[in-house]
Length: 357
Image (cartoon, rainbow, N blue to C red):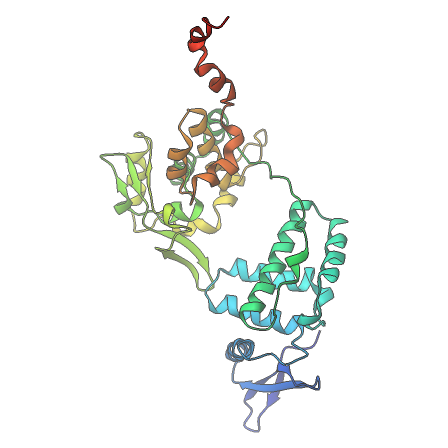
């Protein structure tokens, strides 16, 4: 792989970093290049990213740009939009490890046959669910290319999506949680795990809790902030996953005073926990218990509501799902089979048929 930049030594001993950027192609297929010079590597990378973004807004000439050039701009675009470092890393990793076969292909030359061949190769080593995720990621890139006018249509249009099976959800019942929590000695950690298990909050929502969110008279949490991992580090944001996530969540009365004790200690006492909650969970977990993630606590909470016969509309509101259909899609199999109930609702009315000869 070619070096990202060259180092130029000046007569006064200072260094300059020179980046050679491909910004497109002429009608005869020759490259259009531009040189970026900067005092620091960081500043140079920033200038290159800006240049690539400007480039993708231009009209693309007949032969189009290479996949790798557009993907560089795609990554830069995500960085500039303040996406989380993990998201940017995943996108960059996708290019290096998953789409290498396309890197030197002009974006307009990639067709559905190329993609079908790529998908069949993936199926040899990967599960259908993983293949489907990679299809979606690459398709998202093609849609971005369309928005940047580098591509006319998404080549995935004529390809059937790989059929998948729903992943098995992680659950603990209360007995299992009690077994786990008995191993947690640190009080602040114990309150964190109890809050997550008995409210079903998403990790970011929990880490964004402050004292002003707690209504101790009603034993409720009024969610107002969430924590996000961005390119600038952890930030407390008012932008939730969806509008329904800005909600009121009931909490057990015995948990309220304990949570209050932690929340009044500082403004966002659990903010830094965002990056290592799952590490803490693994540290305390009993090997005899099923493995579970922090998000599995959310699944556990919702399953407990369902088994307590809370209707799906209320469950959806408490969980902060954007639509009740989301609740049913994910957890519908947990609801009791009500078909028998439907058939017996009118059983007492059988008398009306007694007059039939």
